Image (cartoon, rainbow, N blue to C red; front, side, top):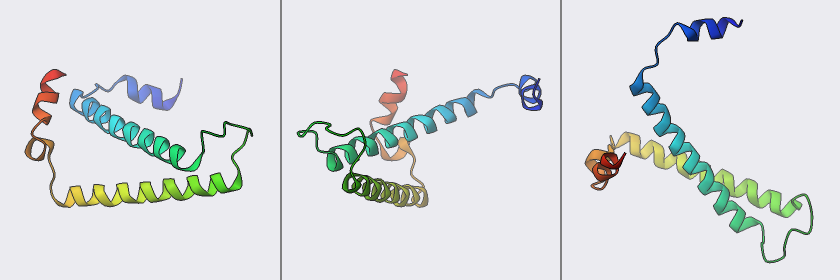
Amino acid sequence: MSLWLNNLSTQEADPEKIKLAEVQFDAIHTTFNNILETCRNKCIPRDEGYSEAELTKAEMCCVDRCVTKLHYSNRIIGAYVQTQQFSPEKHLPHYRQYQEKQ
C-alpha cells in the first residue's frame, strides 16, 4: 500500500475545505469551457466542415494566441478582484438567492 494512502486514510475531511475545493473547481471548469468555446468559435471555421483531422498552422496559431490572451485577461481580472477585497455577498446581490437554492 502507498505511503500517501496510509496518510489519507487517517485524516478526516473538512467539509469547509471540500466546499471551497468544489467552488474553485467549478470556477476553473467554467473558465476553461468559456475559453474553449470562445477560441473554437473564433479560430476554427465551422461552415467549412472538418476536412482535415489536424488543425492547420493558422488555426493552431490563432488558438494559441486566443487562449493566451483570455488566460492573461482572466489573471488580470482575478488579481484586481482580490485587491478590491471582492466578496459575493457584498458585490453580487443575487448571490444570496443562489446560495439558498443549493
